[in-house]
Image (cartoon, rainbow, N blue to C red; front, side, top):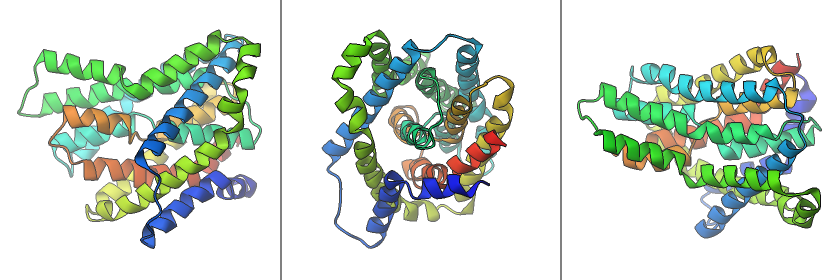
Amino acid sequence: MDLHLLVDNLTNPALLFFVLGLVTSQVKSDLEIPKNSSKFISLYLLLAIGFKGGQELAHSTYSTDILNAVIAGIVLALAVPLYTFFILRLKFSVDNAGAIAAAYGSVSAVTFVTAVSFLEMEQIEFGGHMVAVMALMEAPSIIIGVLLMRIYSNGKRSARELLGLVQHAVTNGSVLLILGSLVIGFIASDAQAEGIKPFTTDIFKGFLAVFLLDMGITSGQKIGELVKKGWFALLFAIVVPIINGVFIAKISGLFLSNDGDRFLLTILAASASYIAVPAAMRIAAPKANPSLYLPMALAITFPFNITLGMPLYMFIIQS
């Protein structure tokens, strides 16, 4: 592996704030980010990345790469929960397997945002359409997870309940915000975008650092819960993202020409949702244990991807 990619990533101030959050939680400090502030920052990050993605998309030359990326993203969102569900069934109940499979088929917007920051740091270009790909990958995995739970569970759900769950997945706040911001960024002229650049661009990395500090604190608090669940959950939370990430990093060159786009698709394949899916699973799978699927995605997969995963995947793509 090119060591400069690893060093650059591990010395990234935003990532170091995440590490600080981990340390803070382990030494039992009373440092915390107020919940309302954390929610605002997460909304800001989604808005900013969506708007900038729309601007990039407006200036992009339309090609088969855009269509290929969208198709690949949706296929991944359908395929990952399908194959992981049956692996998870070796150790977990139908509801837990379905919830975890949905989380790993869906995506982490914060991982995506951190990956964008990584590309900007390495001065690697990427297409604004990748923001749309991220948004489109949220709902399909939730739908597949719910359908799998219905098929393999004794307790059947009515068609109306399933329709309600699909609607909830599609109208999820994070999905609507990222897509809406993308459209607004696409419509806005260069002069209009310049007017809010201090908000959408200049302060972006600072807010990302604060948010990752909060994520570090939360991750550190949840690691203990996951350790109690045994080795299988821990192993799954690392091995499956690596398999998904390495596979897409290898084959994405067959249908995508841009290294930045390949990297972002790889990160989406390797990430796991700890916002949209847990919110949906509260309704879809009340019997599923949130102290299982939430720490797996947030306390293990997320830290791995933003520390070692990103330089590993970029090395494979550039090899």
